[in-house]
Image (tube, rainbow, N blue to C red):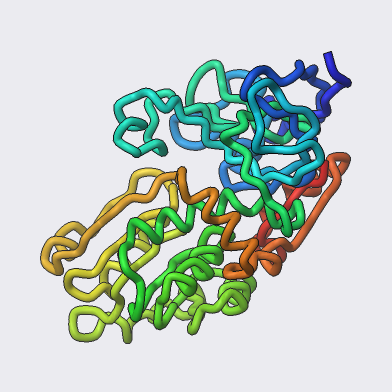
Length: 346
């Protein structure tokens, strides 16, 4: 056995603990990682604030986290593409590679998916907020040239790149992005990289809208203080080509549908539970409605884009806390008036 492994464990809503877990040596095809940085995601906050979301609820203690990077500490047998001491971004996605969806290259829909920090199955899938983490070699993407904090942003960026792929060709298009948290702002960066000609962002917070502008949005509208701000985009059946809905709010989806031009595309990223959908307008305007769930191949693409400097995520990393400041870190991450992406140092 290796040394005690400090891990961030959620027991129930507001019951977050730092606990010692043992780690065995990596087996064949596995890697031992000394985790360096980990980002607090919206799902982590749901577990922290509410013990889960919708039907997905904690039924046993679970290590949180799935946005991490770290240094290779040990290699199992059969690995020749990684080296000790190397910085890697770690994909939390572990598909089985043998079910019908994996064989159809839809690995994000794997029937036997093992995704770090998920209470969806029971026993729960333990997360990656650990000082020492065992990962499959196929989960590790070499991140030379990046900092650990940048590499830990690969996961949320991959989510947005998958959504862009769902939306289709953005070149020369007018794009509406509703919800400017980390996913919304990363979607601004991804949409701009994909060739969007004009990006309109909406949110209820001036702070997040300012961040969206810093990421390249052309216009940022506060629909709380100015409820009719999107009305000009409803003219002549709609002025928006593509709507990336990142908030999970029914009102944001409906506002986007009103702004979409006939044959426009709505991509739903935000997960806010079931909602009412303006189906009559979607039908009458022949709008394409697409979901976007997780990612797979986009993870490596996210790392490469950051390495090339094509997408710069640094302004979105607003806070960093040590493991001894867990409560402060999670409370800060809930405050969208001052924080975007909050990370932990391991």
